[in-house]
Length: 147
View 1 (cartoon, rainbow, N blue to C red):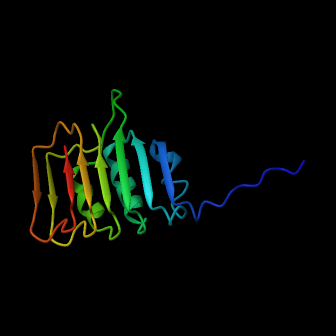
View 2 (cartoon, rainbow, N blue to C red):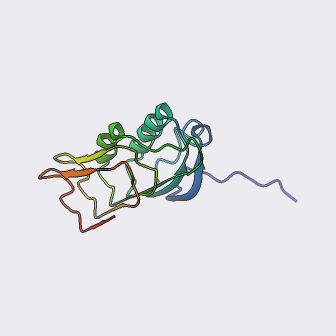
């Protein structure tokens, strides 16, 4: 029987249900997964790792849907306010879902020309979030907002 061969990851378009402690995705696959269109991650990251993951995500220019869920254990931590401008610049994002603990900023701002194709924004149980400020010209394609 021939040995199994590794499948190429370069054309993968959907990846979900993956737990991310920084070492198992972004560092190992930084040059791979460039054709992702849909990404769903459960994260447990410290702030420096959050920034590194946000940068890794923004390099996926074909990404249309992103779902982040934070692990709710003792040191679970989500993306902070400083990551939103990077996420907003992805041109093809159509859906953004941030679940409990995955975003720890107190404010979320959509600046002009950010999230240009975003259709769906779902913010669920984000305890720290006090204000959502969508400036004129931001999220101009938004059709659905859920909390």
